[in-house]
Image 1 (tube, one colour):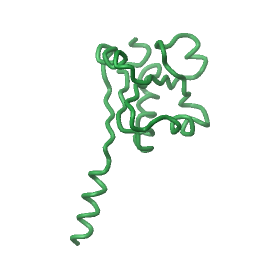
Image 2 (cartoon, helix red, strand yellow):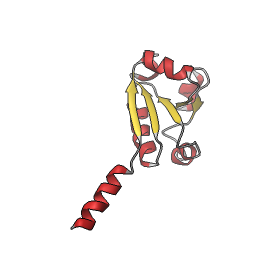
Image 3 (tube, helix red, strand yellow):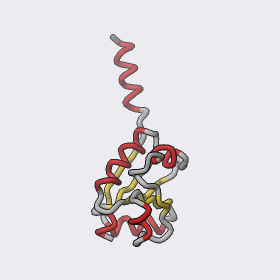
Length: 112
């Protein structure tokens, strides 16, 4: 029983991920810190307007996990989509892949 409790404690404490949905003002402050910005909308949506210096990694693309996994998991990432739905789902996937700090723009690009 003691071993089981120890295993559960270790597995619970090893997850050091951080996901936070932030408003536009907080997002702007994070951008000033030169964190990487990821736009998870489609390429067509991205071409019609995006946040300056954002990189487009399409959440709906078959290779999304492969492309997002290529990023540094220990760096702070700023993500957004159109309304916050896809970026919320993307953040959960990124969390499961071991990313440690993810900030999601509240209301997405529509709020920008």
